[in-house]
Image (cartoon, rainbow, N blue to C red; front, side, top):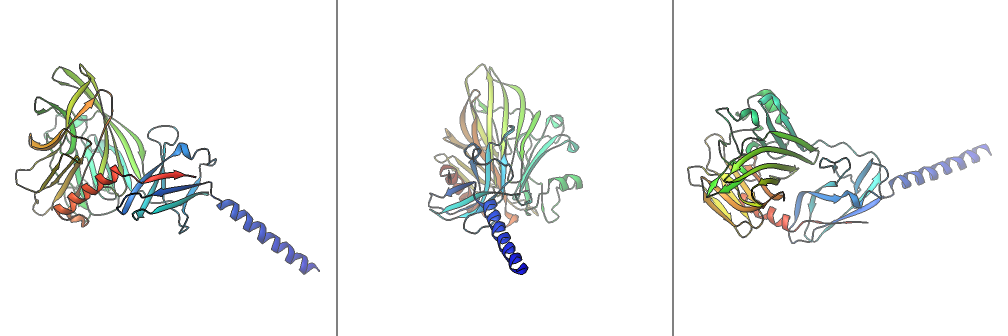
Length: 378
């Protein structure tokens, strides 16, 4: 009789345990991400507005599970500098044309995933600000370098051929102009816009600002890093302009998203150009004003390889070769953000190895911006 009673209690325990597990895994919310376009999508970071989830999630600790495979999906809460999350960022590895990905949010501690983006102020190298993802790296020079002989005013780009984050190691080693198997810095910027910076355009001249003076990190990985750079005021004709640039780099992307805000005294709008510095030698270029695409496949540098540099802008007035650059000319309004994209790729990374590859990447990226994956919360 005692054995029967024990068996009964054992069976009841199994049932209660199963019910507990089931309750723990019950979805708090379901997210549907749909690819309505005719293009297959890969390695995209999708934004889910957190306001649509907040009422469904009482515990800040949760997991995101692929409803079909039951596998956990990496995510990031994006704060954009605020106290509370603005977006839930989800990494979508692959989504066929017209396909829908269904994700469940369930209670539990999410698995730790290696970060794929990183940004930081670099006081040990004067005052660089540097950032990277699993594909590419960038930096901007700060105030301390304005009077240096090797100052650079525009966007600098570092060539990588590893998916590891390398900024800390490269700065520590202080030998990042030599490729030791991970990549190097060989891109030449100087007093130009470099790899896609932006500046006022006045009387057919580029009016460069000084170097950035202030910074603030808004988010720092694992899937997206965002920071803000502040620029002191400078004269442009009769205007005085000060600027902030909010820069985001997501995992799996060759391009930054740049949000530029100009505060102007003396005008309500100004002409600006985003630009790529041109090398003396002839090399393939794509100037597509209709779609706002500027692509440049640089001349090969001996023992270093080839960089592709690109710009994506919305409704430019023109794209052209001028002032030693390839330029996209736009109008910016006083205290109204202007958004564009810049970045690059290195042929020795092995993913984008020809001008055609690079120009197609830029065209596809622009298509994805214009046809974002759609999100529904249930």
